[in-house]
Length: 121
Image (cartoon, rainbow, N blue to C red; front, side, top):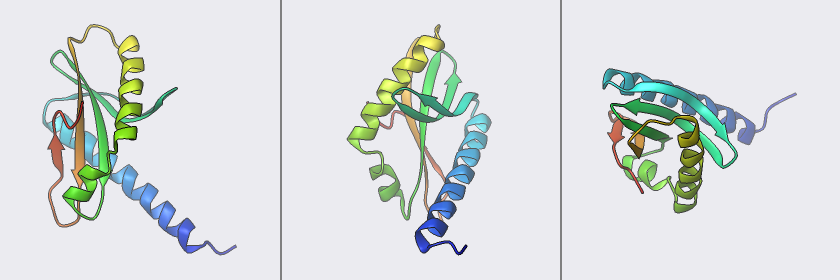
């Protein structure tokens, strides 16, 4: 059975998303973060990467778009609210951290990835 254009682009987007998340994990590890989990499903939504550095629990959203502005803009207010609720759920499972932070790793063609600390909240 032949795939539709939407099925092909959806699969390609999914694979690019997986690649971007793996690259983001590598970048974070190089920067000294400990990775606690990837693609974590919670009752409130999915967390792309859960990491820790020093006494901070870090929720990382990974976005890949045509340019940096589009990638940053892709984290809409409604998604931020879901991430906050998901992070609160994860805080219950990962006690002992003094702070919670929301970061983003942004990918755009022909540009180095950008790790933005305190991307929102």
